Length: 221
Ligand code: C5P
Image 1: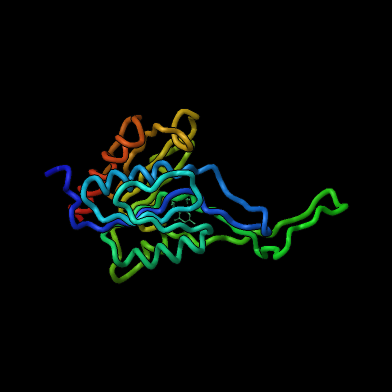
Image 2: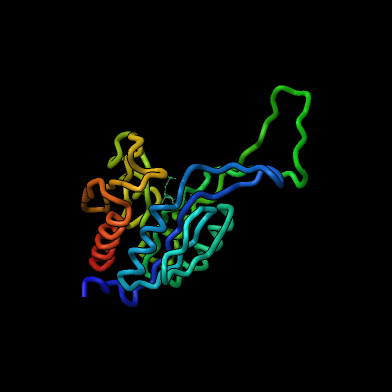
């Protein structure tokens, strides 16, 4: 049945932010709630898939039937993602991975100094989804997300090509109603030879629609 159309399909999903330590009590992160990734995990599991959810620090319950791996940093998320990816049919990168981490994490709490400014040196984090998409053996069908405030579809197409993704879910985050932390969202799915707009709706409904389109493209591949 349509309800169980993902039977025997293995899917890994990354969700939430990553958190990059500055010292034992401070960190750099972002406002990702993890809601979209968790909604996708829930929808995929309800459709019969075997779902592994790799999550950064979020305040969300694990959807029923989903295997959850908790991570903190981008480097930990990369390690977990690569370990899962080759055992899966579909990989969905929904996490808001920190682009940079602190070059040298202080082992003790940093003290306030007399100086009015201090500098933190940041180094680039690995691109997790690009690493998965670059796999040459056992490469899963790879789906990314793109949050943009302008030229949404064009930037998403560029990202699709640059990261060698099979499909990308483009998200317009210029409004405050949708996207980050919201319970509603709208996306445009973009692939090499087509696109499909999905209108604003509750994230749970959108997640089902996205999973159905991902499966259709995965099957067509
Ligand atoms: O380049 P940008 O961050 O906009 O790309 C977003 C997509 O790439 C998302 O699918 C996100 O999960 C993924 N990503 C990643 N690792 C990074 C940065 C982004 O997997 N370091």
